[in-house]
Length: 140
Ligand code: DQA
Image 1 (cartoon, helix red, strand yellow):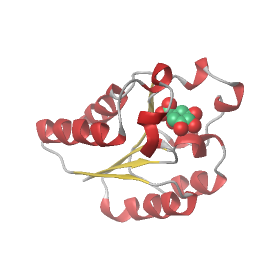
Image 2: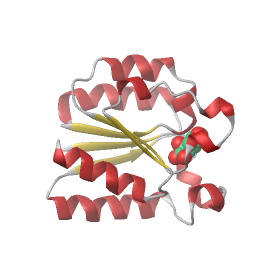
Image 3: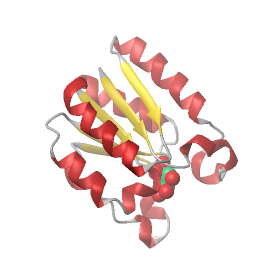
């Protein structure tokens, strides 16, 4: 079982900049992830929340139920020490994912509290970032 956790504002992707995020929605990303997981013969639990505490609780929970974690923490990537602390206790592989290339964007997005805990980082590939992350996790 792999957890795929998504943070704030990813539920309204379809209303955000298509230049940055492409013409997709969280439902579409979930569908693509389920298809990819089926092809790889792995189970996934795909979730999205706008709440930092809920994301922290899900990360904590992944320690007991998941063999790997894919996380797109949205803006909490750049702000959340609570998320940093929750990720720190995990021993499962973590893949940090972003739809956009955060280094092509505002400087406040260049820092990530997830980077230092991640086995790998995939960004800038739109929704394909998630499929690539699943491929990576399945190959570990
Ligand atoms: C994002 C990048 C973040 O900087 C931003 O706050 C998001 C989405 C991405 O997937 O490109 O909400 O994580």
